[in-house]
Image 1 (cartoon, rainbow, N blue to C red):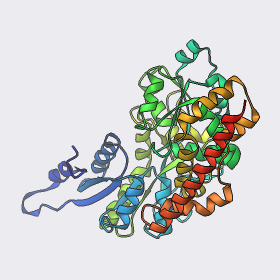
Image 2 (image 1 turned 135 degrees about the vertical axis):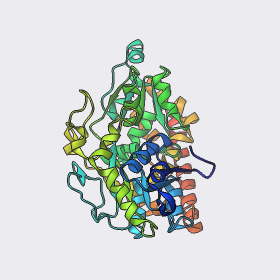
Image 3 (image 1 turned 90 degrees about the horizontal axis):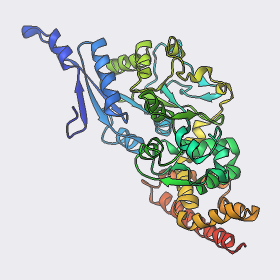
Length: 419
């Protein structure tokens, strides 16, 4: 049960059973900060306190930028373990020397999948699970609509898919920025933005909860959704008549775990990290209610037929996603998606409809033209990352957005003038 302070306390029963008379020992107290849902974290807390009797666990929920700010501010010296699927926050906090080096046994724990690094080379944080990205499909819908099941991202730009896709808005849905960056890294900057724009021209853009657009596919409102794998895997494991496809251009982004430098209970923290990365802790990820991808390849032994194993997938060796590049420009990517695709969506809709009716290379080029080149974007990216806490950075970011909006408006005017 979570109280109003958003803490979950566990392990007291284990402690009480070990106490006798006046010699009762105080339990070790451990505080874990995470963004995982209560359903998942409660399972781990319960299993950990059974494995380590005499330990009580508090859980604090923060995500993304809030987690980073908390560890650097009021939460300094209060958190023992930071465990979350938010790569950029770990990269930034490690660069600021906010984590202890993890001196645990790492046998059987890979640093990479393919050429993509998933754990910190200096061991200030380690991957605990990975998640991939792809297409959730409703086969019954696609059959009724006489639409082929797509296998790769680029197929979604085909006019045959117009009206059949639901697409998450990256600035609003936590996992979606990685999909943007997958296409930018695999296609190149200009071609990647063009592809994103063309897919969005066929799609219904959703900015609500992360699972709301997924429900649109599950309920048959749409036939195709761009999503993270565990939403789909959990639903399919529970009997939903859906399919999930991993395009070959992909990333298996990790959730990471670390011990802050000011951890008040570093020994208990080390025990918790060790447990999460152990055989037993990794096997818990495979539960049908969680259906996540373990970081330890050995966890996939003796699994049911059809359970996806990223370590033996046909495209694992080809993965080369650059998480550090993603972390640096994620906030700029989000702002650029809003400027190019989401904010002008009402004006874009009839232009994309005209493009489907009377294809024009000039019109398509204008509708997908990114208003800043990659080198300039990299130089500007830090301003978008820092805009919430730095007034000068905020001014630079806002000025860039105004320039983008003007350039995009000119492109749309030119596209509208084409016959």
